[in-house]
Length: 399
Ligand SMILES: *Cc1c(COP(=O)(O)O)cnc(C)c1O
Image 1: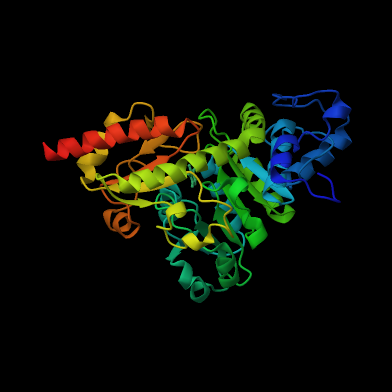
Image 2: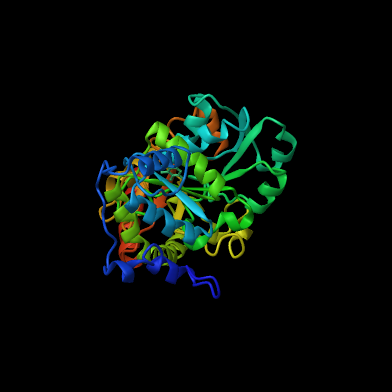
């Protein structure tokens, strides 16, 4: 935004992507829904077409909305500022963003190294071989030994879904020995962590979650340098995994409150985690703010705070988890996360169902595990709702 004294993230969140408003004479971003653009000057049109198909961020003429859209580009520019990267490229979903990264990586090598656990569908996509690139599963500690000349990319997720284990990004970047590292940072948001500052080449978000924040947009975004962005834009233009401009508008509209939402939900989550830990129906709570996840010491350094997601295990197993899902009234029993409202779901039965039983077990996805995405409601109201649902689960166990 300005070079001399960088703004704080909260300020960037409010003003990024709005630098030209004074010049435009507007106070809200223009929304451009055009699918095509007039080409009166053919020479400029041809030049623009070549540039955009080749991955350029802008051109004199946008030509066609699969190649460029100013509203999407405005959100991308704003988001890049929050992640501290030069560029960002937005997609129609988090999975479209992941697919584009894998397709772009396929031009650099024949396999990726990936560390579990990952988001269920990311795991499924990588395992399926659908995109023609092979996946080798590794532990973070095994990355250095597994790198070879054909390694295109290293993929990690931190905090991980659904166990909330943390992965040391800087250590993975060192182990990758120059091979680019992709970090799925969806659970953290740029408010709590900036993986690019730790050396990650690609910072991926399902913007469906905290970035959108209101449960009404499906979107993905990758923050990266301009070389990667060019490759991702080429893939996007060719495969069409676009973000709709109205969705980009909504994401940009939500950015100014991202910090407030993330910090309030996090404050609620810390209190709820402490109360859950003391509830007799609960066997254990996995939450970075309790120190009960792998690498919890990274809270305070890699991560500015523990975030607002947690997983907890019930003594009553699958039946108790089903009772809690059926009994919550304020919280919504639903997949997805990072919304202003509290969501609770059962990873083994829903989001991580695509993993085979053995992988589920190794990743700690047990029949009695529930994942909680804490919202910004008053914490006492969330607790009252959870407590009555947990009591119902404990009661049905005794009965
Ligand atoms: C939801 C999610 C995704 C996939 O994003 P979609 O927008 O649903 O396609 C990827 N990674 C993580 C961590 C997620 O939570």
